[in-house]
Length: 345
Image (cartoon, rainbow, N blue to C red; front, side, top):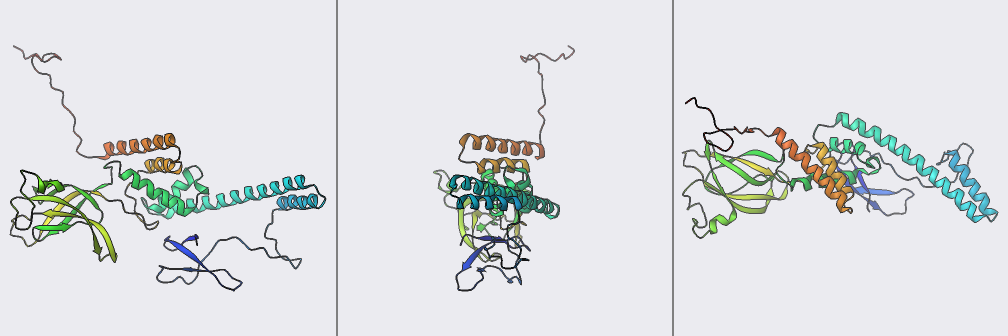
């Protein structure tokens, strides 16, 4: 019951459940797919079937491996068990090497093709590039690589506000009171109504000794946005409950039925669904470093080294792409320790 499969049309990862029965065929069932695919293409281990006719194809067609196995059987029949074991081991090693090279070549070609067609910045493109770039990437199954990349992004998003993790949203406010923000919002950093800045406060604000008390729709002295935590709320767009941030907001007295609240927010990590899901962190070198760290998390020094490299790459990207950078002006005044400016007097 541990088998998984990707649907080739949309790359959705699904559980494949084995169905027991008396048939000569192995039967599996999949759920959560609509519409049900008309056919599927599978890859699996073949069951041994004795050859009965001269034209029957052999499942194993590597002549060197077959020769070694024949020598092993012949030595075993002659009581040379140690020698037989050596030949058998060499036969298996030969097949393992051939299999790894064959699979590696096929997977490399598949990933190279995927890079060409995948949308930039999606899980599919990152996963294809990662498989070609990291150690043992071609030997890591798709589901595991998908999971590790997802974990890498989640881990890095907890380390700071990086480029791509802060976005602007607009929310319609019809009255003062509590509002739910989009699922993607982790926390509000700044807010404004049109050109009027809105004061932003934490959950403790309502309970300060010299504070205004618990704010309600009937207690709206000035424009504020107050954190009220998060709740599990039914989302009609997805059909189930999701966590959403809740804030108390005071609507401005602008004689408008609906006022637009503009917020700058840190986005929440949301697990990727399939290869078409967009990555929040698109800094590929940083993701590579974090994946390398997670792949060998049992080595603390190794993990910390690659984690720090990932954070440094994100910090450098933020400094490079962040707008509004200011240059400090050096001012040398009369009598300052660093010297005087000749004023011509």
